[in-house]
Length: 359
Image 1 (tube, rainbow, N blue to C red):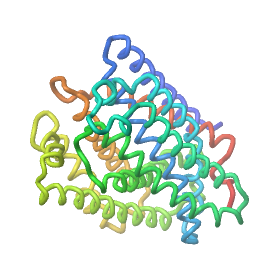
Image 2 (image 1 turned 90 degrees about the vertical axis):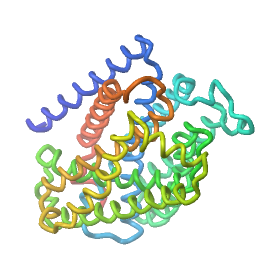
Image 3 (image 1 turned 90 degrees about the horizontal axis):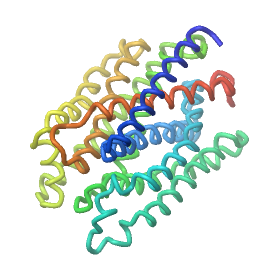
Image 4 (image 1 turned 180 degrees about the vertical axis):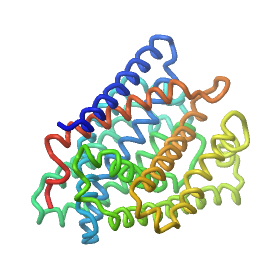
């Protein structure tokens, strides 16, 4: 184990401890609502990143990509988190559902069956089991079988994670509806995963010996893909809000007003909107920037932070009824998830190095 690997592992371990202690102390202090909303936020973010890493590999396979097997293997290796996310989901639904979902204690008339903890747990668990199971099978099967499994995984992911978006995000405001949100949820998760790969390509460059496997051309290709998903995700974002605007229906427009025109969330919403789409769109026009891994990683950090903020705005305004915009507990628990994810990925890479995985 080299020095860079050891240092990074200790940083991630420290972050995990901070997050875990914050979670326990906040629960003990009676802050269950804030604790579980931060948990849900990070569950959605990191589960989406992990699942989309395998989907990236499957898409690479379907399109017969040849531009970077190392980045493809890095994405594929994120499957390590999928069994963890299953356990995290069950913990959340067993112990935190009453703090997260308003309909758990105040059933919505006409939706009592669909919006029930038991039924939601069952159907979403089925989605995670199917999509995660296909992902693990894809990663560990022989090369010739990936040609069959890859398109099946892509279809299952699109359908399954649309339902996850509807259930775990849209149901937080049970009177709001958006038929596009499920698609937007999984596309934005893929966008976050690409940003994470850009960060990881620099963060783990020395620790994992990536210097000889990732060059400027591959960085440029990743930057172009990140630019493309900035356009795609931004297009979905705009299409969704455009329908709200010209429809001007109370059950739709109230969701927007609460986030963009009322304090304390309005400033955060406008920062996120411009920061997640317009800023990267302009910056990533630069060819020279995309060929510089460190600069591309800096853009990746910015995008990832904005997409974290977007998930915050999906969840917190629907749950939080107190004063101000709560951030301290949420950020500390996020540090714990980041630490656990990073430490777990590094531990996985020690057993299955991304530079020597299946070609």
